[in-house]
Amino acid sequence: MSRPITLPALPRQVPKGHAPADPRGVQKRLVSLGYLPADAVTGTRNARTSHAVLAFQAWQRLTRDGIVGPQTLAALENAVRPRPASTLGGRRVEVYREKGVTLLIESGKVVRALHSSSGKRRYETPTGNFSIFRKERNSWSVPYQVWLPYASYFNGGIAFHGYSDVPTHPASHGCVRLPDPEAPFAYSFMSMGTRVTVF
Image 1 (cartoon, rainbow, N blue to C red):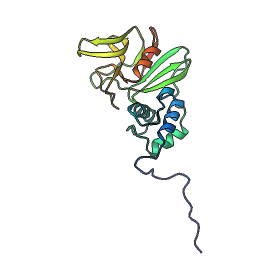
Image 2 (cartoon, one colour):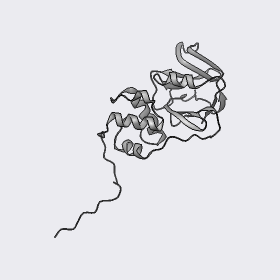
Image 3 (tube, helix red, strand yellow):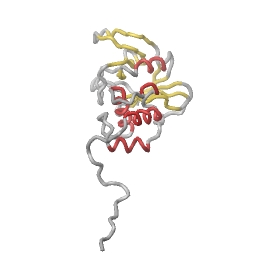
Image 4 (cartoon, rainbow, N blue to C red):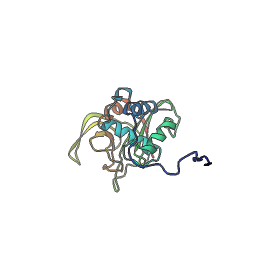
């Protein structure tokens, strides 16, 4: 007579590869956690969902690859909406440079968590407390000869702005890059005087 096999409560090693995750279900879960807006639920894998997954993976300290593999899928099941460092009232923004995540906060609650990329080595985005003092729908960067869409400035020539390339490492010349599809919402969320904290 054979003895029954006892399985461990949790697997010792998560298998590699893609998870058979339903894109619509993943998108709805990301909406509930603040990484995607409701109108981004399309049921198809796309760049906007990948950016949201990158932000989620960064916040959860997972490998950032934008893919909903077994580890990311398991984390999505148990995750809660990101909690800001400060519970002060009003609208605020928190930038986590090393994580590559920017939190848009209202009344102490995270409205959106966005994938972002701050200043690279020798051009690091300064840490500290700032506030939005200038906004331009399409701002021209004189030093770098490039247009910065949906720019909200918070420290000299350093701004939040949309960009087509937002990698998982600091890559800008000091600004905080946001994915192009998310930049309009961030721009409208931040008004003159909105407080910004960079960690």
